[in-house]
Length: 263
Length: 365
Image (cartoon, rainbow over all chains, first blue to last red; front, side, top):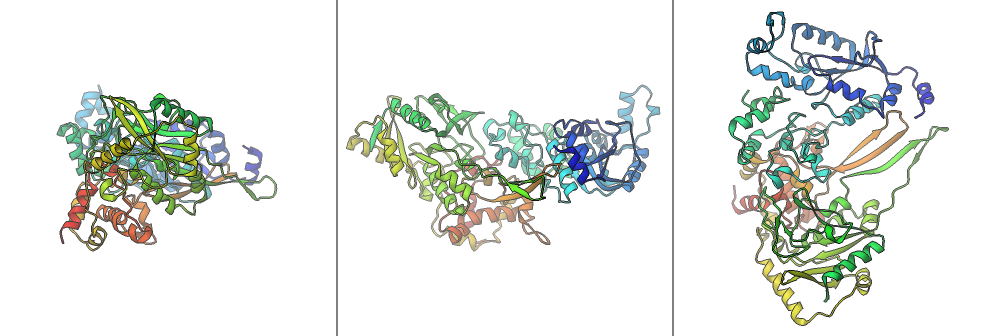
């Protein structure tokens, strides 16, 4: 790393901002967790707004804005519009921002009933009936899927944006990464239910690498044949309610998984 | 033909290791007989079988004997050591002073031996040799690889090499060819050489004489194996009949089941599609161009100016099957299928190439 040279070459670095909506913070932690690359990130961009990392919060406009979380309140519904106006490029990161997240399970139930069960004084809550992805409210330039996102994908995306390349974000199935890694298919060889064939790649086929079935945290791939996979899941011994629950987890709000789970 | 005892097989492995060759061969891992580096003789799957394969169904089971090669093709094929799943084609590092860049040296190909290459896979390597004839890195790796083939006497449930005329006898560019023969559960190996390198290797092994009866027994067993294939494919006029039926209703029927997950193409030992990605490091000092396995089932694979030409999964399956069984003849002079059966076994929903091809070829509409 040659910090002095890089700064000299790039005196006005692109400004990066990270905004959080309804989420657990895990995805923005993926950025802070880039231990080996963190210095390079800080040299390549000016971190202008990232409350989880620094209390020095500068106003916009920003060149690259990473948005974590879903929209669950009227206040956030307004706030995301202001964030969009401040952003040259807006990238949503993680299942909450791209599909509504695990909290989109409320979309199929009565949120008031949930609130009564969970909170002693639910009247203090001011929340929308549904949890929705960022793209339902403002235009989004790029999406990184996952719960949480994959760190290598995040770095590759930043790298591509900084060099003016189109980021390479595959829309193919997790199976493509599983096979490239030389892993043994858990469905065929062990009869383990796996959503890999209909889930978008990007994680490096992490779970099948540990002999677990994919649970779809990267959401649907392009043209996912959920009907055909549902038949297979039944053959593997999941009863219909179990199949529906399998679809409705971190990406319950994503079109194909929502419909497959009966939502 | 000569004979190698079980102890002689050990000598073969030790001779290869002494020559500093990495031996890639069958290994039991994660409930499957995969391929991997052999570090000791015991790494071979002693007394394990995986021949009872079916569409979307694979299990390893113990055998009653101590066969080392009593299995068929598993989830991996040899192509991952020749046509790599991911390969850096070149890496450029920016020079400090003059603003130019330096290309890093191409890595040398490691000396290797493939142990236990079956007829279908030997044919597949021959097919990829033609495809990658102008790829220097592939050719270097191929050149550095010694091939020890094995004849198949117990075909698997999804095997159809007899239909594709690639087995059960391993034919073509092998250096040594083994046949595992079990006497009262103990294996010995009938061995033949197929190249100058193979003859030299054979001269270093404790070989024993082989009788004409031994030879006759192997031939009989191979003839018998050819009649015990789990699958078959009628190849007479197949390419023409498939190519003439792009609008056949069966393509849509397959698409209703097809996950377009690309598993069939990635386990196929002849599929050669790749995609290229350029990447840089955040400091902007290093750039590299990476080639990785791609698939015609991936939407982006058919992306051209104006959109995707195969957005519909039915079109993707048709493209794969027609390329494999029809256009391949025009392009390379052979079928693209060697009858290894992997695409049938490893399709998560059990789409069966032999069944689907017969359905399209067997009727007009």
